[in-house]
Amino acid sequence: MRIAFMGTPEFAVRALAELVAAGHEIAAVYTQPPKPRGRGQQLAPSPVQAFAEGLGLPVRTPVSMRDPAEVEAFQALDLDAAVVVAYGQILKANVLDAPRLGCFNLHASLLPRWRGAAPIQRAIMAGDAATGVQVMRMTEGLDEGPIVLSEIVPIAADDTSATLHDKLAAAGSSLLPRALAAIERGGATETAQAGEPTYARKITPAEARIDWTRPAIEIDRHVRGLSPFPGAWFEAPSDKGPVRVKVLLSRLEAGSGAPGTLLDDGLLVAGGEGAVRLVKVQREGKGPQDAETFLRGFPLAVGTVLG
Image (tube, rainbow, N blue to C red):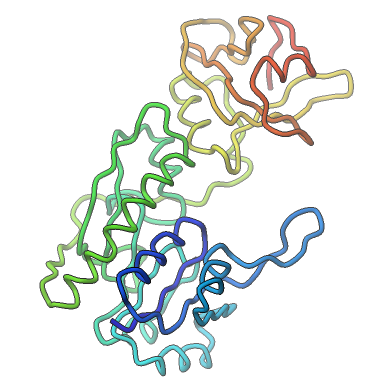
């Protein structure tokens, strides 16, 4: 089919690669405009833009798909379908209705659970046993369209948002071509979403702070759900004042004490119920470190209370 692909982050790259490999004609790739990154704040293309340009595909980076000129250009592409994977813009009816067969979204949850911006993180943080990927027909409502095809992906006890992201990206990249093939031959069954929706609101910096009064199992989920970005964090005391430390990996262990108290010399910390071992951490201005390396450069005594 002649399609437009609309996506921005690394999650979308593999899906685009599979569509190219499946032989679809990519009329245009839409992605968010380049953003300043790194210490020099140089403009850098999105992962999708970099990948698409490497293949010689035409790329468009509109600031808004509500711009009448952009809508007109999209309508002029004469598309069979459009595929949206974490694009980052809301599409209105004049865009959704332009392709002959419609617009289809690959979403990283089992809808209607975790509609919205952060479904991978929210699934881990909530302690879900499984999530998945779904291809749905897009409507103007937020992730409300009927489902074309689904695949369930279990969430392991040690999954972080990074590892679950990779599992879902792999599942989605194989699901998408199958869904498009069914749509193209007219054999796709579209099923309305059923059940009470939940919403995966965007992660805020303030929300990333660890609340040591919560049960250890919730702290561990919080850490894994926010690893590696934006990273759950706490404040450790020092002679120069509190130092922010991110926790990138943790695990549950036996232990008890006042919430936030270090219980041993290996970063075992008491929660409101139980304890959590901080396995990998990152101090401000430093790279990720295991607990032993971190404590050699930033000693913390047993009994220290973390903020």
